[in-house]
Image 1: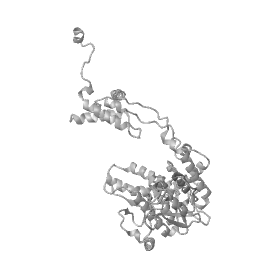
Image 2: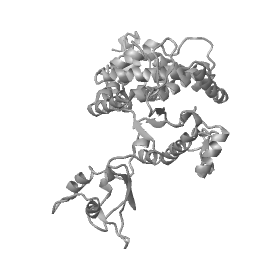
Image 3: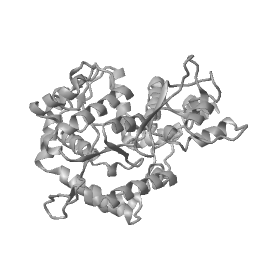
Image 4: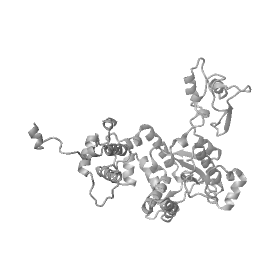
Length: 427
């Protein structure tokens, strides 16, 4: 045995790369874990090789003088196997699965039906090579609005002065930096807090107050597009927050609702002694028949059908005050909201011209807006909205619509990113 080892035939001839840099190996494992945990599938073996190369020169305080990697791509591929990384196809289709979920499809059908039945009341777009607006001929014309974050609506000074006479609170200091004479607002990165639910509702309210004073919008009805986010669909009240008997829990002082005759009604939730009435007493005031020995869950089911307790969001209640209808786009369907196309266009323009500095970013944002207007992209977005709506009306599914109006390269077979287990990291 001694003679065999003296000849150096077998055994370990020297220290491996990881024997010399065990701490770097731990960093590499952690880097792989972080990259594989991202939702984007951009991690490659070369990414790991370059990370190891960069950290090697930093740890040894050396200057890189050539393009050769200290750990080859082939060696890093073996390292990934040893770390426990696996590459698997995503057969569950998580991204596209939600678009054809039963409740989402039902909402989409209702959404499409609403627009198809009222198409003659809306401004639509011609199918010419150069799209033009098609003016509706019916008496009750409906004007489509986007989310108030859309940066194109504002009043001139004369119009804004008229709005101030009706709504003096428009000039109140609310802690939000609104653009002049508009409902669009901005925040200072790293300084201001992000918009919360109430500030977003206030933004909608401001938009609803300003709209009727725009000269071009006179004699129009308004319909506001809103995406289906929690901020927008949160409800004023929920039946589960009420108790059944007097003196039990009650989240609000009163309930405002619109009855079947489109009249505003109010139900007080507390009696003169300051005790909550409870759902049973409220049901009697609403003329809802409640059988004897009715259980709380049965009572909630009865009241859920009444207009006072229908699932109406805070946003819809605000819009009703100003005679504006709000319609929520189906979940996961950004193609049904043209304003999303504006943000995509802006991001594309900024990415194309940016040098990654904040100063240039602030100048590119108004440039992107000007480019959007110059190229009349809004006409194409609205035309695509109507084409998409009609395609869904013809019972096309989400993938078919994407391929028809976005790109023929769209695919529902999405490949997942690499995975690494915590167990292998701990070894």
